[in-house]
Image (cartoon, rainbow, N blue to C red; front, side, top):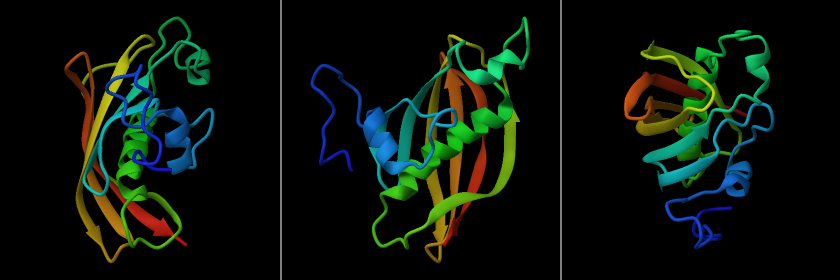
Amino acid sequence: MSASSSPAPASSPGIVLHAEQIQGLLPHRYPFALVDRVIAHEPGKRAVAIKNVTFNEPQFQGHFPGRPLMPGVLIVEAMAQVGGLIVTQMPDLPKGLFVFAGIDGVRFRRPVVPGDQLLISCELLSLKRKRFGKVAAEATVDGELACSGELMFSLVD
């Protein structure tokens, strides 16, 4: 399902892809579906998405009691899922699953806590042999950089 085949409801300005459309593009499901909405998307080039961080998420039971912090690996995973949205709608790519192949230069700049809204921006840097991709990714909260880095993907047949 693409944004052109099912436009966002008129009552939700700014939404390019809503939850059902995202589920049609990414294989992730609860509790690992970490993209709530897409607000900008150029297939094969870039995507901007939102992850609403809520206290009801399972990781906060143990990370950490009395001081809930979103684990850095989940922030990186959310960025990777936004990167995956760029690749999933590229024409002429072989069918299969793109998975992590590497992570370069990832830095965490501020804690992410329940109630925060991550604004995740990803831009495709390269695609080689239609099997290996690299994206530049960053996640911000209220305009402050929370995390950034380069993420690499590889196609699994």
